[in-house]
Image (spheres, rainbow, N blue to C red):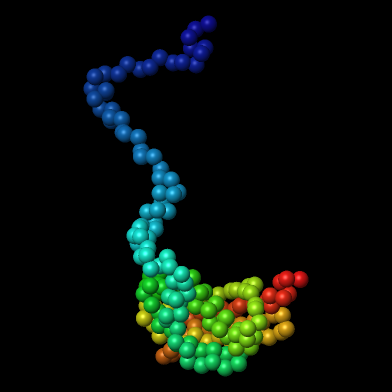
Length: 186
């Protein structure tokens, strides 16, 4: 049997000119970055590469930060209204109120509203939902209103609405379901 039976064919001869025409080998591409490195680059672009100030690690820093923007306007049975100015510390990359801050403010307002009908009875948050309809920009003045929409012996449901102070345009709405702690212990 001939050598062609193994499937190898002779290579065509190359001239010195032909060898010079061939491009030089390219260096290998850099290895792809890991998902961790990609996430780290993304976070650095957002400004998260800096250390947190020491004050942010103390006690109730986040609760204090949320409460510092809220000013009580109305407290009635089953209803509370606060004025809220969007602080730069609670904005996102787009200079609008961060979604997590919306949820935290809404929960705080809902709990204050809960206390107007439940007093010192202990409840826990069992369910929450926030609908984001329009962004609130930095330094925007908002009215944040909490209302009790259902009060039972063991369940209380509250809604919280964020509206621009000037136009009353609805920005966000949240719903919270609170359960009596005694029910949870059964």
